[in-house]
Length: 153
Picture 1 (tube, rainbow, N blue to C red):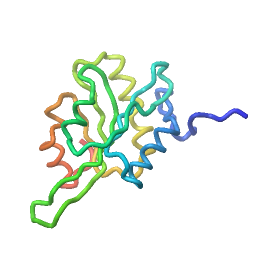
Picture 2: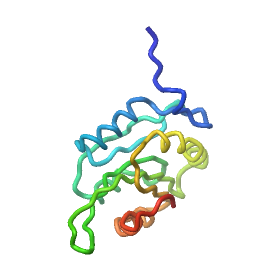
Picture 3: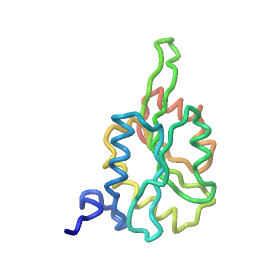
Picture 4: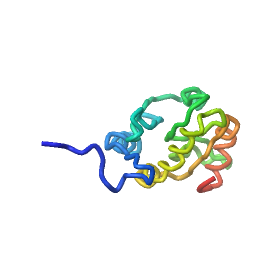
């Protein structure tokens, strides 16, 4: 029996669908906390958003090092930080749209037009970050956005 890869509700206006395994990976991160980040990419056929890598790291810099310098990606990171008032640690799920200035124009266009379908499918995201260079996704920049509870960039 034929099993579709994706539900129609996760199809973007670019025609790129969100693969069901991409949603499953997010739900496992959100509920199980077995991984601290997921990096998504659009497959080579430009038909689906798929998981490129999942990982566990205590280092935000290690996560950033996995983002390509010259191509686009989406990512979710379980961002843990200390509350300045001494109330302990907090954790928030952050969605990244990584679109470096050096990425090919076609790649930037397809990632931009496909983002909403993935973003809508990932329920429980607290903050969204758009990054075009590493300074925009640096720890301090993200900490500032997360700690003030900002939404979209």
